Amino acid sequence: MLNHLHISNFAIVPTLDLDFRQGFTAITGETGAGKSILVDALGLLLGSRSDAEWVRPGAARAELTAEFSLQNNRQARKWLEQTELADGSCCLLRRTITAGGRSRAFINGTPVTVGQLQTLGQMLVEIHGQNEFLRLTKSAQQLLLLDDSGDYQDKLVAVRSIYAQWKSVGEQLKALDRELPTSSNDLDFLKFQLTELAQHDVSKRSIDKLQKEHDRLAAGEALLMALNTGIGQLEPDSPNGDTGVNSRLNTMLTQLQSFTHLDDDISNACQMLTEAAVNCDEALTTLRAARESADLDPLRFESVANRLSQIHELARKHGVNMDELDGVIQNLKQRIQLASSTRQRRMQLEQELTAHLEQYRVVSSNLGRLRIAQAAILSTGVTQLMAELGMKGGVFELLVSPDPTRPPATSGDDVIQINISATPGMPPGPLNKIASGGELSRISLAIKVASSDRNTAVTQIFDEVDAGIGGDTANSVGRLLNRLSEHGQVLCVTHLAQVAVCADHQLQVIKASSRVAARVDTRVLDEKDRVDEIARMLSGRLSEQSRAHAQELLSAANATD
Image (cartoon, rainbow, N blue to C red; front, side):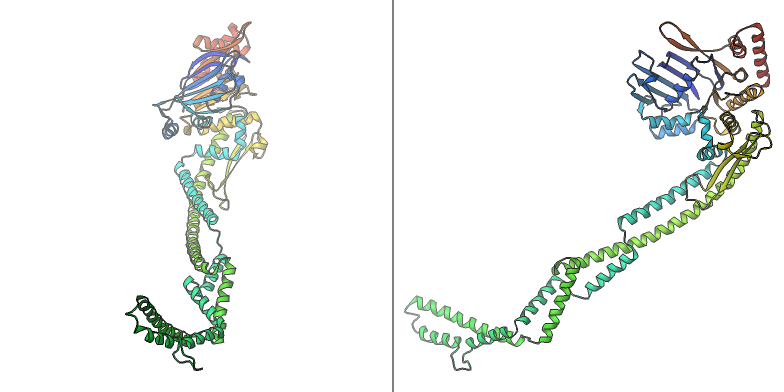
């Protein structure tokens, strides 16, 4: 509930302090007195767009402050606690606008964004002007008004919860596809590549060994000739009668060893020749073994060459050197393992997505049945109130059509449409095509009254809801506003005496002009002043007759209450 409003240097208001009470307060005054300035000030405090033109001429800045009681507003209290902006059972909104157009917003003394101000403002106040009623033509607003009037908040929470789970799993699936876009065909190709490489030993050690064997086989007869020559030079007796290297070394040793005691150099030379003879013997043995193992089989050479060629072709296909193929195999194994685990994860997520969707359809269907029942109740109530508001014989239909083929949404599967007929005998048609602006405002009021028990914590502000009506319809509007205020607080800017007399309190806005500037002031009317203000509203001037008429209207309204 709005407790207090402070305005400073705003438009033509130098300073203004207003206290508000629970119930229905009518805001009245001469045309152009500045009644809507109060609504504009509250709109800015609730997050409306600011402008430097709002600053009173000559002032450095405009300042607006509103205090709200949160005793019955659990939603606003919870939001303030979650944002760490709570400060007891009251809430103080403050906004400043400089002459340069800069705006600042505060909640309980803490600087906040305009977006935060808007979020909290929606929980504190609803302002209904001529343009606000056009929101009724939007399907989202129609669904909101239906749900606000129904007693199935737990079902709404269930739908939103299951939808959030379904959406979360869907996002995980999308992320999985972005991270590893491996199709079934891609995975099969990776497995084929691995199988192809696994047919060969492509380890570096194996390739080096195969390359050496290839080179040895390629040497062929030249290698064998070199081995035979070496062996022939080392063997003691060669086939052609030549003496081998070992025989000549041993002959020299025999001749020199008898003189080693005479000369150290001879002794050292004999030692070296002895070692050389031993090395030659070992070399001869090794060369003979090499000759024995030498394989000059051309089929073996062809086989080794083919294997090397195949490995080289695999390396070319993968864009690496042959000694890097082992790393390619490891990479393929990792990719296959990751792709396989991803496919398993995808299958798991797809199963979860299906399960969440099925659960969503069930809870959405349950919600739809409750909505259909509530829509029938609300339609009957609004139709009855339309008759009181000058639309006797009119019909209000709120239709709920479940559509389980729609993509899931936080609001469920239901499609909402309001059809009305404001004229007896005319078939109902879509609200946005049938209703005029004045009818929309009265229908909106009827909806608010029919569902008022769901809005006890929100201050309702009506800016000239009675435009374009009069007579008994105006009386009905006043009575309905009073009925609406039984569940909270209603403020209404009005020009109609029939509406004002139904109010619990009346606030008069007065515009005073001087040579320097115009200014706006207000006062809460007592019983006597209220009679005078109602009389002015009735006839435009004060007289004994107009006062008597005003007193009669006030007495009749009090008697009705």
